[in-house]
Image (cartoon, rainbow, N blue to C red):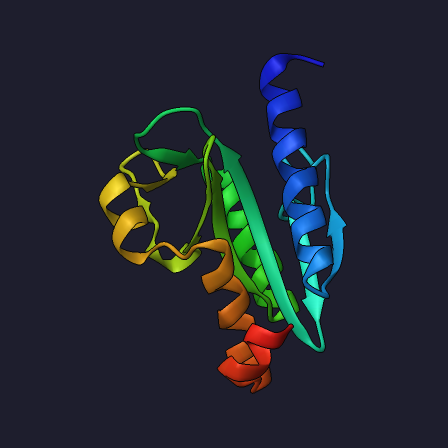
Length: 147
């Protein structure tokens, strides 16, 4: 396995475990970046009827994050069919950030991109992502802090 693939797999497994530890039923789609006919997001996490879909990218430095047109549009179709909330997850050496897929900009070439400014201003931390789900479930902040 090449180092980029190993880095991506490591990030997916780390996020998988973090979500599982927060009470989600989680599945990982290791072939999601391949040329499948039915592209699906890297991580699918479910909690009491709420579906999180995460297309995960890992990076070691700042800059724009690109998602290919095929990968992005496949994930969006999957989200539409499942009723899930689709996020771009960005793993850096120190943190995770999650950006609602609707915040990505389409390039002239048809690919999708998230810039550093959008990620910083509109991206969610892992705890913010959990709060997003808990809010959808109607869980109070007090209960969130206990759990």
